[in-house]
Image 1 (cartoon, helix red, strand yellow):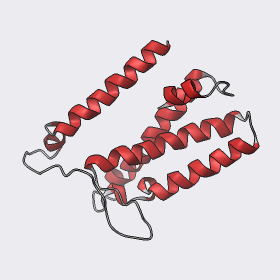
Image 2 (cartoon, helix red, strand yellow; image 1 turned 120 degrees about the horizontal axis):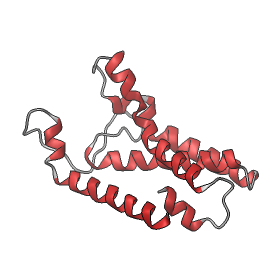
Image 3 (cartoon, helix red, strand yellow; image 1 turned 90 degrees about the horizontal axis):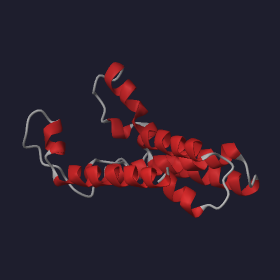
Length: 152
């Protein structure tokens, strides 16, 4: 995603490595709630119900950072914040394919998912690894690696 942004923007106030780092950290940021999920909540609440998985949070922050960037044209922090938030929004979209995402939280308490992964295998994570969607995730990772290497 960061490489796609860099390919479309002629001049960036941040370096390529800073931009890629912002996108990668942004794409991982919604899952920082896993620390709370395992160490404090003890699996009592689906971690996609936490505020870090509320799309409204990341979409709002992305719009705010894009507004900031439009007002401060070559602001490095504004640009990196926009790339970071774009990574977060992409995380929400990709989570929606096979994971419940509460798209309208906190206003509507209803999860949305595109495809359901049937619980067939134990341990639970085998269901995701053996589902066709895992192959799609691998394709995305290989594609990202190829884009990164082509840019280097």
